[in-house]
Structures are given as C-alpha cells and as structure tokens.
Image 1 (cartoon, one colour):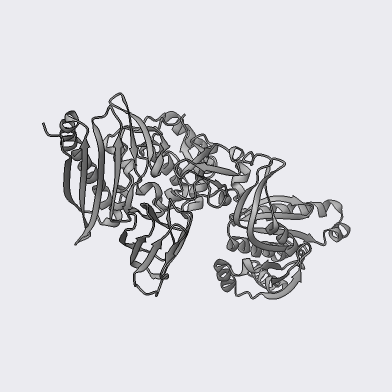
Image 2 (cartoon, helix red, strand yellow; image 1 turned 30 degrees about the vertical axis):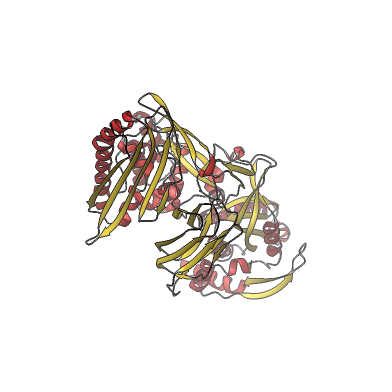
Length: 618
C-alpha cells in the first residue's frame, strides 16, 4: 500500500475584506480552539529556534518539534511540525494565503502537506485530513468571515461558559457603589458572562476600550474598581523585548525582579516599567471557570508587532513585498547579534531597499521608504539559513504599562500595597514630575494665626491632590509644604499646573481670601521606581532636576525644562491658552551644566485667572 506524502489544497472566496479577516484568520490559537484541536501542556526550547511541544490527544501523550511560524502581514502564513513516535506521522506543514478580490472580498487558499511515517499514517491521514480537519477548518473560516463581514470582533465561545451568576450579580452591585457609569458596568458583566474563555483571561483594558468605543481611562478605572469588587484579578505580565510575549506573570509588583528570562527567545533582559511590565486583568475564578490553556505556540497574532517573519536560505536572496504605514521598523535575525532600522516616512521615494545580512552586520543600502507598498530585497551572505524578522519598533499603544498605571492616583489609592520588593529598582524611560511648594507659609502663620493658617495649608494639599488626579497624575508624597507628583504625559502635567495656579489665585480671591503663592516646577525624563517605606516612589536625576527647577519658581508661575516645552501636547496647550514663556538660564545645585529653563510668568497666569474669576462673579 502506498505511503507517499499527502497534499491537500482548498480555495474559498469569503465576503469580508482582507484587513478585517487577517486579524481573525491569523489568530491560530483561536482557530485551533474553534476547530477542536487539543491544547498543548508545555513547550521547551530546542535547537535551531524550534520548540519541543508536549500534550495529549485522544488520551495519549504526544510531542512534536515546532518550527517558527513564517508569515507576511496580510498575505500568508504557514508552520511546519515534526512529530515524534508513536504518532504515525513524520511531518505536517499547514498554511494559508489571503488575496484581495474586487468588491472588498477575499480569496483564501489553504494547504496541508502531510508526510506519513507508515501505512497507518497514510490511511489515517487521508481520513482525518479530508473528512475532518479540512472540513472543520473551512467551517471555522466561514464563521469568522460572517463575523468580519458584520464588523463583529467578538467570537462566540467554543464551549458554554460556566458562570456563577449569583456572584457575578453581587460583584456588579458592589461595583455600582463606586459611582461608575451603569452602561459600562453592564458591558463588563455581559462580557464576563458570555465571551470566550480567552477573552476574559489576561484582558487589556485599553484594547477593550477601543473595541467598545469607550474612553481608555474610563475602562481602566472600571477594571481597577472591578478588582476591588471581586469580579477581576489583576496581574503583571513581564514582556520579552523580542517576541513581546509574557516571560513571567506576577501577582504583585513585589514579585518582580530587576531582570527576566524569555525561554522562547532564550535571552535575559532588564525589566523596565515602560515596556516590559504590563497590567492585565482576568475574571475571578469565583465568578467563572475559564480554561487557561494555549492551543498554538506561535502565529502572527501572538506577535502582532512583527510584520514579516521568514527563512532566508544561506547565500540566498528573497524579495519581500508588503504594506507598511509610517513609522520606525527594525530588521533583525534571531541568529545574529545586530539589527538595522528602517524608516518609513511620508514623501520618500518608493525605490526598493537592498538589505544584506552578514555575520557582523545588517546593511541597508538606502533608507527612508515611502509609506504604502514597500519592497525589500534581502540577501543572506552567511553560510546558514537566517530567520529574518521585520517588526514595528513602537510598543503597543493598547498596553496599560506599569509606568502609566502606577502614576494614576486612583491606582495608588486602591492598591497602596502594590510596591516593589525592597532593594529592587525598576527603570522607567519617561515620566513627568511636578514639584510644588507653598511660598510664604511662615508669614501666613504670622499673619492670620496658627490654626487658620494650618487649615489653609491642609486644604491646599486637598486641592492639589484633586487637580493632579483630575489630570491623570498621582501625588507621590508631601514634604513639609511641598508636593511631589507624577504624570504619564507632559501635557497633563501642564494642564494640572495651570489649573493649580488658577485655583490659588482666582479661586482664593473668589472666596475672599488673599491668593496663595504656589511655586511649581516641571521636568520629564527617565527615573527609577523603588519601594520607599512601603510606598512606590521615584528616584534619579530627573526627580532631582525637577526639585531644583521648582526652586527657580517665584510663586504663581510655572517653570519647566525644554523636555516639557518641546512636547507637542504642551505646545498645543500653550497655543490654546495663548500663553508665552520666558526663557532664562540657571545653574542648578548639584549639576555641572547650565540649564535653559522656561517660565510661564505669574502676570500672564494671574491675569487669565482673574478674568475667569470675574466671569464667575458676573
């Protein structure tokens, strides 16, 4: 009986456009789950970038060597697997190619190549592939096509959710006590009760916010309070800088170290709050029994920042054609220590870029490609096959990074126990700091007396905390009459600063009190997050510079560095408020260089604030 290779091909035309189908069809983990394939239990790195995967099928233990997925964004993907005995198959290659058709339709070509190990494998392969796998795969593709055609991204669960409806309702009642929008609460509870298992595990609040058409911060607040209400559990994913998969999951910040290891990429890397650590949420096991098992180890959907990944043979060439938007991209190989940057910009020439891979370098003959259809001519000058990766340099804007979340006032209030292990300092690439101080507080005590003066100083802290929180910042600590606050963005820090000065000029005048003169300083840059007396605090030159910048304030004004002034969002705020800054130079204590600082002058802020007060009085 013949035992030759089994080659099957199928072509289907789907109604949805390619850009809607690609995210669904290339999500091989979801497709495998819907097809009914078994989940795998563990994977371990092997030689030549492969993984040894272990699982069970029909009650029997199975294992296989999985080669890295190959794909080109919105074009094709495929994977090769080598099976170990006793399975009667040696090798399986599966893939799909998507081609746009007129009328926003899409043609999908599927291929399955199976190499049997023996006669049993040939017979079983013919029956299984033709009568079940291919049929089930086409069924799932049609299901996903119907969803994509209707612009519905929520896929029905592969199994009926097991939900404790009583506890879900009780959690929703608790959540309603936090004065959150009822529509958002209903949306979350419906999602937790009806979505697929994968949709309620390791949820990204910003991604769900975009899908729901809701403000990102509103959904993040919802998730934080839902955690306090018993609906959700939060966890911190430590992401590998290469594959950007979770190398480690920590229940608390205290479980984090200052470095991590990715077993898939076999690299160690420093942990930082900007990119490496992301906050995710999962439904509480008390609410729902969701199965947390992977059904595919690779695939384009697992690393959406990678636009193309393919093998380039030794001393071989390939032409890579794909569509790229404006931005910065990296070209690298997992076998080489170097990488190259490719800039895709508006107005550039559309000529192909020639790229040569050697043992020591990746050379780009010309850079600055035009956005749209891009051609990369790849040449491998080495004696080994290379896995070439083209990826977006920017990290996902849908990630709720630890740097962003821990700078939110509500997070610090709700989860004050979330601090790092003592002795561990985690780097943060960029945060904006605000330092304030109350000028003339000693004279205030002498003028109006200790008790009234103390009340005004205490109330001024409440005003500061409220305005800082309103603009998405967090009050880190108070030092005497001074405040240290942190913001994810320079724009929000300036908005808060302007409102602070308004409150302590026009606001005090409107209440019949003499204005309080608050000194404000702003600066942005890298820092270190640390555990200081069981509180999350920040240290480093950026923090020290901000404190010195605040010393240059005369009260009622705002002093900032060029790192603040050059921010595009800050420029928009200044233009909107029709405010101009005054530049001056200072040597800051403890720093050798001379700093150029910028003052938003007191008279401009005071006049604008007094006008606002007059309008309110009228």
